[in-house]
Length: 503
Ligand SMILES: *Cc1c(COP(=O)(O)O)cnc(C)c1O
Image (cartoon, rainbow, N blue to C red; front, side, top):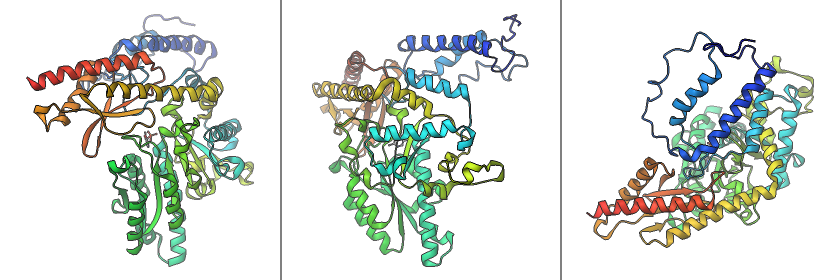
C-alpha cells in the first residue's frame, strides 16, 4: 500500500474497510475540532460573492490527491465561506438542529448507502420508518388515524416544502377526479376551477407547491392577517372568501394552516379551519415545520388541538428536534390518496411483495424514486435522548427566549412586537424622538451591524408592514451565557447606532 508519497492519495480502493477506518477517524477528529472551535469564527460568513473561484483551480485534478491536502483546503478555503448554523450564537431564521445522535445516524445511513424506494430494496429501511413515525406520532399525541395502526401513516420527506407539495398533489388528484365525474368536464377544465387557501403568513413553499401543481396564481388565496389576531388566519375572513369563490363557480380543494408561522410563529385556529375544510370538502394540511416539534411537550400540545380534523400534518425534526438535516416528518390519514397521485409501477421494479399489497413502498409517497435511510437518525435521536430529554431540550430553549424577552423589556429603547409563544422573539429598535420616521432603517442597520460584527447571527422579517428583527433560540448548543452575551452585543451596537443617528 503506497503511503502518502508526494501528492498521491492513500485512497486506492473505494470503501476498503481499513482505509475507510483510517480516513473516517481523521474526518471525525476534524469535525470534532470544528465544533470545539466553532465560537472562534464569525457566525455569518464574511466572504464576498465569488470568493471561492479565486482560490480553487479551474479543473478537477487528473491524479488522486491526499486527504491531508484536501482537509488543509477545507480549513483555509471552505471554512471561511461557511455560515456556522451549529454555532450557539446562531439566532437567525429557524435553526437547523444537529446532535451527536443525529450525526451518528446520518453516518450510519451513509455507511449502508442503500436506496430504499420499495420494501424489497431494504426491508429494514421501510419498516424502521413506519415504526419511528408511529413513535414520534405518539409523542405528539396525534390521533390514531395518523398512525400505521389506524390506517394512516407517516413518511419522512426531505423538507416541509416537499411535504406540502405531495399532499397538494394528492388533494388535486382527488378533486379533479370528483369534478370530471360529477360535471362531465375535462381534467384541464376541472384544474382551472380549483382554489387553494392559506394565509399571507404561510411559508413561500405553499406558493411554490401551487405553481408546481398547476394551480394558477389567481387561484391561490393568501388570506390577509394583521395584528388583531397576532398574524393568525381569521376563520371569518376565510369563510367569506370561500363563500365568494363558490358563488363564482370555483371549487375550494386545499387549505394549509400553520402552527408557528415563519415570520412570527403565529398559530392559526386549527379547529375552526378544520371545520371549514370539512364543510367545503377541502384537504386540510397543517404545517408545523418549526413549532410542531414543541408539541411533544404537554404545555405546548394545546396549540396542536384541531389537528384531529386535518388530513395531514408535517414538521421538521431537522429544525428543532436534534436531527441533522434533512428530516421532515409527514403524517397522513389516508396514504392511499398519496399513492393514487404518485405511484408508478414500471416492470423493472415489480416484485411479489408489492404486487400482493403486503408492504409499503415509500416511492409512492414522495416525488423522487430513490430515498435515503433517514429513519436511522431519527431513531437514534429518539433513543439516545429519550422523550424526556427531547422535551427538556425544547423547554430550555423556550425559557431562554423568555429570558431574552424579559431583558428586552428592561430597555425602553426596544419594543417586543409580537407575543412570544415558543422560542422566537420579534422586536425592533424604537426610533428616537428626533427621528420619528426612521425606526425602520435603524432596526435594519442594527441587524446589518450585528451580522457583520460576527458575534451573533440574527435575521429579519416584515410584520404589519414594518421591519422586524427575529431572534430565535434554537441552536443545539445555545446556553444562558450565550443569550446574555447576545443581549450585551445588541445593546452595545444599538447604543452606537443611536448615538450616530442623533449626532
Ligand atoms: C422553514 C419552514 C418551511 C420550509 O421548510 P423546508 O423544510 O426547508 O422546506 C415551511 N413552513 C414553515 C412554517 C417553516 O418555518
